[in-house]
Image 1 (cartoon, rainbow, N blue to C red):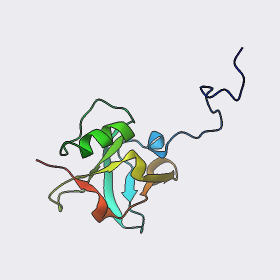
Image 2 (image 1 turned 45 degrees about the vertical axis):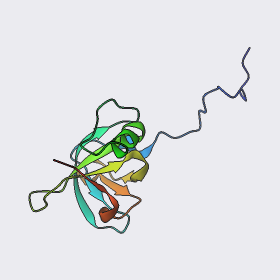
Image 3 (image 1 turned 180 degrees about the vertical axis):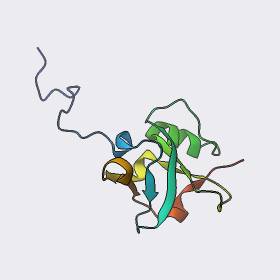
Image 4 (image 1 turned 90 degrees about the vertical axis):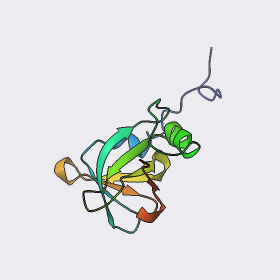
Length: 112
């Protein structure tokens, strides 16, 4: 009979990753409060959907999950944030905000 402290027992107190609360259309800001854009797509950790990034970073993002952030028409490229770069999600409804734990210039640019 397994015990509660068995190494393979699930940890009921572990919170889901912040990326699990993200959905398309949410606003995104960086760690300093600068608006980054809107969530265009979300892939949860261990996805098989490859982002438009070079090999290496793409596989890392697939493992951690990622957001495609639409920067709007005034910017040339959209950006990606890994699941590990999502700090928290706050608010509800139309006021929901995704806050990253990095500045916007540290995000990976989508490649064409």
